[in-house]
Image 1 (tube, rainbow over the protein chains, first blue to last red):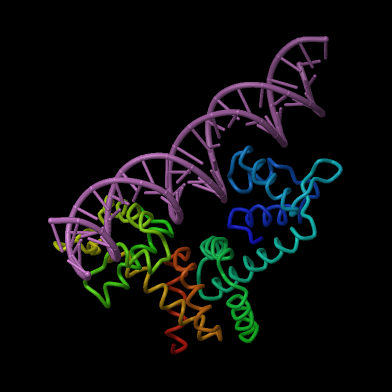
Image 2 (cartoon, rainbow over the protein chains, first blue to last red):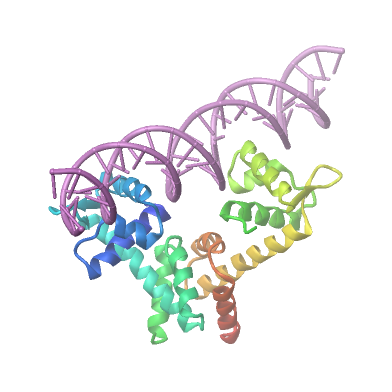
Amino acid sequence: MALQESGEMYLETIYVLSQTSNAVRGIDIADHLGYSKPSVSRAIGLLKDEGLVKKDDNGYYKLTEAGEIMAKRIYERHTVLTTLFINLGVDEKTASEDACRIEHYISDKTFDAIKAHMKQHGA
Amino acid sequence: MALQESGEMYLETIYVLSQTSNAVRGIDIADHLGYSKPSVSRAIGLLKDEGLVKKDDNGYYKLTEAGEIMAKRIYERHTVLTTLFINLGVDEKTASEDACRIEHYISDKTFDAIKAHMKQHGA
DNA sequence: TGTATTGGTTAGGGTTAGCTAACTTATATT
DNA sequence: AATATAAGTTAGCTAACCCTAACCAATACA
């Protein structure tokens, strides 16, 4: 089942935090997203039910294989769209903020077309 | 107050329907958006409270000046983004569908940058 | 060893925005 | 005139997803 923006943001956050730490806790996710602890607890619980997130032996959050695939997909959208907007002259902050919303709403077809275009124009 | 996706879609729908008819009814909006009559009734009521929509003397829906400004803003995003995606090789249907979602989430800055880029590349 | 801090969860609430069922009102048809 | 149809509204439901308050458990430290 396709996730909504909220679920995708949680996966992406775990993915990003995992790049710099192998001990991702609920509170870290809460801080990163600016949400409360209970909101994170609930949301991660749902993602666990869907088999996208798990807890490792030390109680830290990890993405499952399925979760990692989805997280990478969203994260790629984020980086590519951010780069695109910066290439068009948008400031970094705005580019990243816009990418962060649009990444959840762009289809594979359109995203692939954008990637192809950027490759062609050497960016 | 900035509207959310839902409110913007209602304004855009009234705007589009008004181009081909001067008698826009709730049921027409419902058919266009694929929503139920009560959903439209409720949503339009809120937009009336916010001074964005009004009923004319014959009971048909009209945008107020403020509503029309917002509707045009969204509609321009829709047409420009659709054209952009088509230019990138995306099929018309997908391009329009993606534009319809993204139009609500793109900032002025990024949208202006996209418009400038398209003008420069003669599209 | 007792208390403070930190992290996680439970319980309950609020907003947004869809839905169906059922009622009202107006128009149209027989 | 009686009834059928169409449009709009009210009431109440649901789902997603955020919040605070309060509690539990583990660690830390004086």
